[in-house]
Length: 400
Ligand code: HEM
Image (cartoon, rainbow, N blue to C red; front, side):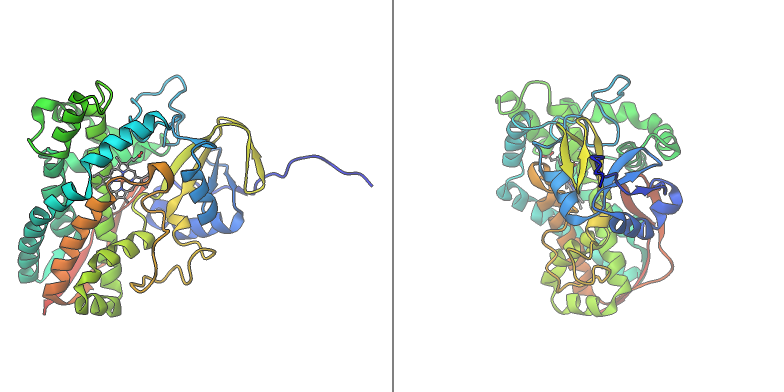
């Protein structure tokens, strides 16, 4: 009898997850990714990927095995030709990461976040009054996007026109993925706004009292290394704007499709934050993030060489039937804790309290005013390489 020592090869998938067709309807791809195996070779981009919860969580959280210093996107930013500066917080490992994260955590303390509640809530109540009066509205342009852009950039300390926000956001979340036609087209669309974007991160442009101002003060006090404030403020704005717009949109979409869930929320508006969490489990805003192996390691039974990129498909893991019962069901009674929409491990989203607060204010304000919430037409999605984004969400409400 002969034995071979050939290491097992991963299953191979030929579908390209970053085409508009797949991005507009990612669920069949998610299923084939999960069912092919714990770790899969994506031939279209010559990269490893996982769509299972256990492995995706391990890749995102085990920083001694999977580094962020090679970039949290598909490209290895240590290689020649890299065109963008790494994010000081997201694209670093401990101990550098620990210091920066510690300083930011103070800036985002529960006390500071609580101080924004009143402002967010006043805006949400006024907006909900107006939307209920209109009866029909776009859940993205008139509700989620309008609300987030009116409260979050000012909390960071920046005023950002909608067109600038959309162009820059699309560019950022396309660029985390491959350098394909979506990335190139969105970079071109964002070009006219880039100078404005860079200038608006400078200290002189910050509104006093916002998170950006506090980041610059932390740099002055020595809590942050010199020269990182503009970079961190950019990561803050970039990380918190489109993601929250997407997440509130996902929750409104799911609620509009599930009248019994809306009834439950209407009877208990205090479930608004829960509706948001289940909404982002069900349709994760950030669909995929990347890590790079530190040294030869094994994952899902496959031996990986050092410096190997891996795509962790959060959107697929959040519906992994190995982790969730009836994952395709949007259910407010579910324990959604453990979903990966905010990531996992040392880089888990530092702004999640702010995102939850925004969502709770807007969704709660609508739930207290509307007897019904329903789709008034088909939603239209906007394909972005790494972000699930509804572009248009026609909604109809009836007052309570
Ligand atoms: C629904 C809303 C949001 C979603 C879905 C989301 C998602 C995520 C995810 C998946 C990560 C981890 C990325 C990785 O490990 O590669 C992350 C990290 C981060 N997020 Fe969020 N985010 C949201 C809102 C926010 C907000 C409101 C802010 C700012 C106030 C923010 C700031 C950040 C920052 C600075 C990091 C990097 C943390 C680190 O590297 O230690 N995010 N977010």
